Image (cartoon, rainbow, N blue to C red; front, side, top):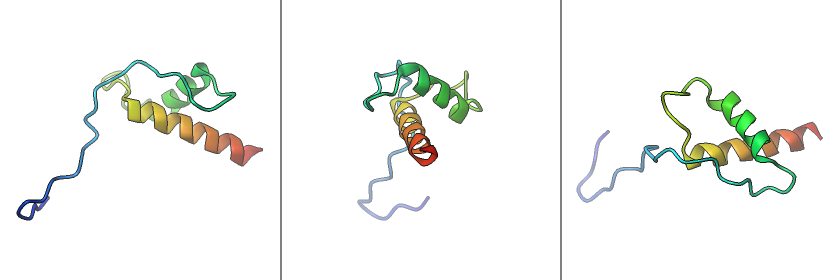
Amino acid sequence: MFLLTNEIPMKTNLEKPVAQPKPVTPGVTKGMVRQHAYEMFSDKLPDHPLTLENWILAEKDLVKNQQTEA
């Protein structure tokens, strides 16, 4: 990665692991998101616990898949 003078590097995905947050999408349960997150990120578990970004991505992807199937 090359940095120009005064350039700030992009944020990396080094967020801290967090407990699963409550879903924001009506009709979506924590269990549904947990299962989908496991399917999406099983290759990195358990060595790298899920971050808030991972939980959000899992919920968004789950909702997108539900809308596509409907």
